[in-house]
Every structure is written in C-alpha cells, then in structure tokens.
Amino acid sequence: MPSTQYWQSLEGQALLNKIVRKRIPEWTSGLKHAQAEVVGKVLDGEKILWVSATGEGKSAAFQIPVIIHEEIGRNAELCPGFKAKEKPVGIVVTPTKGLAANIVTELSKLSVSAFAYTHNNVTQFHKDDIDIVQAISECRYRIVCVDPEHLKTEEWRRIASSSIFRSNILFACSEEAHLIDEWGNPDFRPDFRYIGTYFSSRLPSNISIFALSATVEPGESTSIICQHLSFRAANFHLIRGSNERPNTQFIVENLTHGIGGEIFPQLLPYLASGRKTIIHCQTLETVYRVYIYLISLIDDINYESLHLIRVYHSLCSDKYNTQTLNMLENNPNCQVVIATVAFANGINVRTLLDSISLGTSSSFNLTWQEKGRVGRDPSSLARGVLLVSPATLKKAEKYIEVFL
Image (cartoon, rainbow, N blue to C red; front, side, top):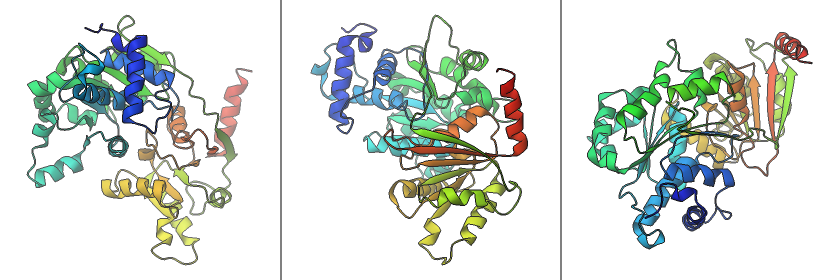
C-alpha cells in the first residue's frame, strides 16, 4: 500500500510524469518541477497555496490529478495498492463565467470532461429538461467550475451530500485566490470570503484543498486569504515562485488624450504592428467608445473587417465571448479585443502579444493580471503597456522617491 505521501516520493513523481507523458504527449518534458511538486501534494490530499507567474502552468494542479486517477483506474498494475477513484471529480471555484468557460475549453483539449456551472448553462439545462444537479452528483464530469455565489445554494448542498460525489471528489480549488481579499467585501461579492467555509463544512475532510494565484502579495493579503481558507501554519504548504515575466516588455506612457474623450490615437502605433492585442478598459462605456473610434478608422466596413475588432465583457453572451477567444486563437483576421475586467483574471489565449491598459485599474494586482494575459508562450516577445494620466504618473514618482 503506497504511503500517504506517495505522490511526493521519487517513485511517485516518476510515475506521475510517466502518466502525463503518455496521456498528454505534446507535453514532451512532462511536468515542470513546481507543477509536479504541487500535483503530488494534491494527489496526497494536502492543502496548498500556490503563487506563481501567469503562464507558469498552475492549471495543472486541477487538470492532472483526475487524469492520474483515470489512468490508474484503467491500469491498476501501474500503482499496486493505490485505490483510484472510480469517477474522479474536482471542484474549481472561478470568479467569472469567462474564466470558467475558458477552463472547460482547455480541459477538453486534454480529453477531460468539464462543466461550467454558470447561470446561462444551468438555465439551458433546465430548458432541455436535464437535471444538472443529478449529473454533477453522479460525477458525470471530471471537473466542475462554479462561482462562489452558487456554492451557498440548495443545489450545491445537495451535490455535496451525494454519496457518489463524496466518495469520488479529489479536491476543491479556489482559482484566482487573490480575489478572496480584493473582491470579497460586503459592497461587492462577499461570498468570496466564504469559499473556505464551504470547503471545510460541506466537503470530505480528507480531500486536497488548494488555491492558485499569480498576484498574492506577502504579508497581510496572504494572511487574509489563508484565514478565509482555514489554512493554518502547520496544516498547509505555501509555495511561492517568482511572478516575473522576462519575455514581456513593460511600457508606461502619459495619456495624450483623456479617457473620457472619443479619440484614442495613442493606440494606433501599437495596433499598426498587426500583433494580437487586448485593450483593457475600466468601464463598459470606455469599451464602446474605443470600439467606435477604432471601427471608424476602417475604410471598408464588411463582414470580414468586423472580425478584426471584438469586445469582451460580462454582458456579452457566453457564446459570443467564447467565440471571441476562439477567434483570437484561430482566426488571423481577429487582431484586437477591447475588454473590461472580465478578461483580466485567468483567461488563457496563447496568441495574444500586446496588453494595453487605458488608465489604472483598481489595484496593482489587477494591473499585473492584465499584463499576464500576453506572452503566455515563453518563446514569444510580449508588451505590457500602461497609458496613464500625468497626475497618476507624478503620484507614482513621488511614492517611489520615499524609498530612494
């Protein structure tokens, strides 16, 4: 019988990489060191807060464990004595429906079935007379993405009480964990503060609970997140890597035209390069003013030219936003997406090369997340551009002077 820390042993790590290379042959080198370390801890049922750069492959923490259980379930001789789950399942708590949909898409590329438990998807299942609660309770999906607000509903109490679900669940993950602190306030989305309560009170005590982020600062922010996830010094692992992006050039410029205006000529030199670009705006109104400005510069408006520029925000349909991500990946005519904060956290589009922020976001962490949408292919050269008011730049310079 393997020990309780088998997957962290040399033998366990070797088997882990052997299975990964078999099931995901395009990962020719297997898992990165940090990925293997974290996945081993997840498989051993431990608690983890993993902080590392965007694009470092943190998603492996929830992608790989179900694949390992599936493979050993089919080939028990790979690990004699290890009892693989018959229907392995994991929960991933996501802040936005866009991220949930993106995770489902990425998992499908690995032949892992997943479901995004969003309002639109649940409503559609009801219309089709499909009992999605029963489907999840019976572990028909390997990964279920759900937002914090749905966790407190009666449906999710029923799911967590299902004997089939409880006997097969491997882990519960809080994706983009920095938002537990940033968004989890009474005036915005207080249920972020209760993710850990749901995990500890509703789910089996022997599963792995872990949280992922690229932007959890040491100190108070880390302490708040750990407190809300019930992570104590002796019972969890803090794995903190660098979130440096060596393949991304950072550029800060003074805005030459106000964000409240109707023209944005500073964007044009960047867009003239033809590189795939995400433009981050702080309000929905700004998104559409930028969109109208850029569309007005196209000489011949036709069906194909409308593919050149897209918008992305939470009021767009799930179908439209998913189509936008697919076009960024696969349509060479789609160059520019203008987005709200809905595109800032976790979205993975490897073709994006330039991130331009019009104005400053609500926190530096969010700005860093915005820049993390580009250069996700480490062999690419990306640009992260901040266009800020002269007053904001002056304020930042004065702040830095204090420490010089």
